[in-house]
Image (cartoon, rainbow, N blue to C red; front, side):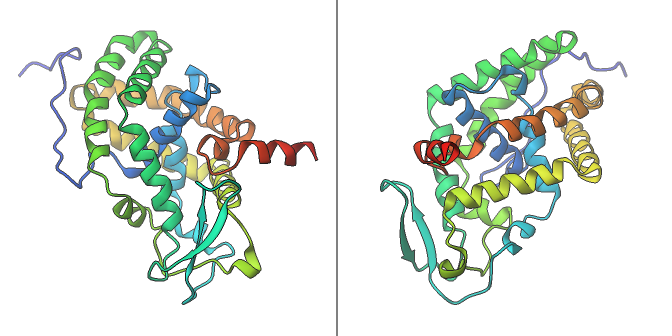
Length: 268
């Protein structure tokens, strides 16, 4: 039997509604990437690095994020209403869950990724990223053109509630506002800080590389080339991801923080 040609079109990944062909952390990664496009602050060199960033948070236990200043309570959940100016706080009965904020952000991200303009911008940025690896440029473009539309199909089938449960952010916990007094901006910055800590951990970096190598196995005719790219560019992209998170206000891009408010805090 002859080996399959590397330029052949890969077969569609098997998927069904409710079952993503990519891990959910990859979906979150491209959510951040798409937000960065319209904000105009993201360089094409980081077009793919967020696949690694969210891999770090996936490799770690998401429950650690909940354990910080979060306590079990029967009280109503405190929800931040971002649509009313400076973040109006209101109590919402959510079966003792604090996943309300997660569901709101997930719903916003899904709506954003469902827009044709957003999808076109993401594809264009990924095409530009492919030009950064000349020896694999054509294969990279082929993979982008084939798998990105499938990704958007999967996004349309995602339910925010299911997503938040998948990443272990919907547990029976609630924030005690009198002790914590923290809005969505603070929560976002804490999450980014946790990701940065994990990115600096060599064990986490190894976990991310192993995760990506396993992901290459689903690319059929491109397995070897995919793994070669991971080994060659993985460590560099992890370093760039760390630098990007340290120099970029991702929370403002995600609208978890008010830009004007953040600027005034920085000047004070």
